[in-house]
Length: 311
Image 1 (cartoon, one colour):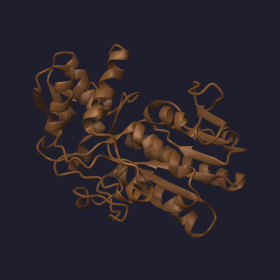
Image 2 (cartoon, rainbow, N blue to C red; image 1 turned 45 degrees about the vertical axis):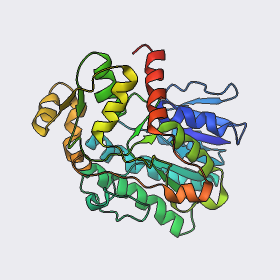
Image 3 (tube, one colour; image 1 turned 30 degrees about the vertical axis):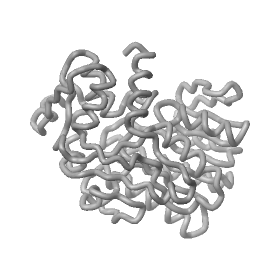
């Protein structure tokens, strides 16, 4: 049994599809899970409830954590550590292996121009400190031989079934509405993005590869070093639109936060957009011989998905 905690959204959905290649028993866990494969087991649960979480993990061989709690610092601080501790405890009790889908917030700001699995962990943001705590919780159990686990990290991502991507929210949807694409930071800096179907495929491969455990992996991400401006131009070209850009300064982000609360959470992360942001996945590529989808193909798929959903 392979179980996905947080089975909806841009990672959970394609991950369920990929896991079907390895196991006939897939359990999808969320508040309102929906089948991806006909044989999926649906397990409705509030994953902040200890008893529900333990029941969801019980009987699992591999547990994938792809849940995304509300993007709010206080929620992260109050929810993530206790949730992860219960996941760890339950995985140990069930002798289940753990796969944690992670981001790059825990890396030192000086590592952002070229991130590898060995980059220093020294987060400059409060959200990054939460992610570092989760990393340390998992890897401590691994070092003490209490748990078999791996951490699969992605860069900022984009793709179908992914309504929360910056490239969707701030660029594609604005261009579709005839507005300017919005961008944070320096649009002439490189910013690599991970394509979600690539991330899901690689996460499934890692979870089903015995010697992949007890280490950190960067999921396959484009080697093409496109700037934010070039990503916007790529999206605009696919839409047949002019690549008009509105840069969103800090003061505007804070002002928008009055009406859109999630915007209040962005200023501390701007360091990632004011310098080159290159995410290296050569460790995975060299081990598995699998490479990322090209940005042109990925953007085409993302735009087609928006069109299918008539957004």
